[in-house]
Amino acid sequence: MSLLIAIVALGLLASLSPTTLVVFIMLLATTRAHANAAAFLVGWTISLIVVFVASYLIGGSHTVRSGGGHTVVDLVEVVLGLGLGYVGVRKWRGRHLPRQPQGASHGLAARIDRLNPTAALLLGILEQPWTLTAAAAVVVVHDHKAALIVIIAFAAFTVISTATVAGIYIYFARRPGEAETHLEALRDWLVKGSPALFAAISFLVGVYLVVDGVLSLAGI
Image (spheres, rainbow, N blue to C red):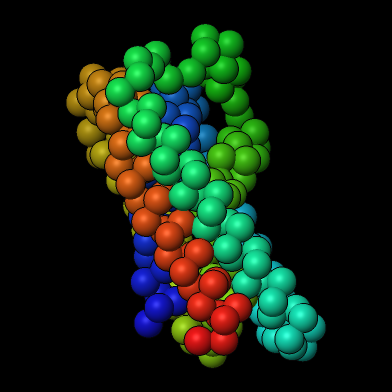
């Protein structure tokens, strides 16, 4: 149960990544919006599959499950938790700082506008919130369970972390005219308002990882 709780929290945090959402909204303004968005989601999913499969295989190895290897995993979990906590505090302190509503430079916007589906697929891999995905992977390695539990955890993380991006895409696909007039405002809101929520969740997940890692190091 603790594995699934951590995975759900990390997936929620990943789904609120402002950078990813802003880039995806910009992607929907390209000339090949549907093909590029679909390719982006494919790249995102491929990266998730690779990380979770590798994590499960590593977690099942004798080296990781033995004393020294397990201690290293615990320490990595603590370090990741401290990193997320630090990011959360910094984001929270800077939540009221003025931000550029466009969320990206004109140069980046021009490069995204020229993307083809292959480049969009690679962008989906690059825009994966790797810190959070790595944290999810460490949780899977640390709490190595039966294959069924890992599959459920993977499915939960995939659905939750992709929910916001997928929801934006479905809205755009079903109501393109209406979406075009609202997505720019949504992008500005994401840039201005999401850091506070992102900071809070990041801090809470960081605390969980630190506590879980410390308790494991202590043998509790």
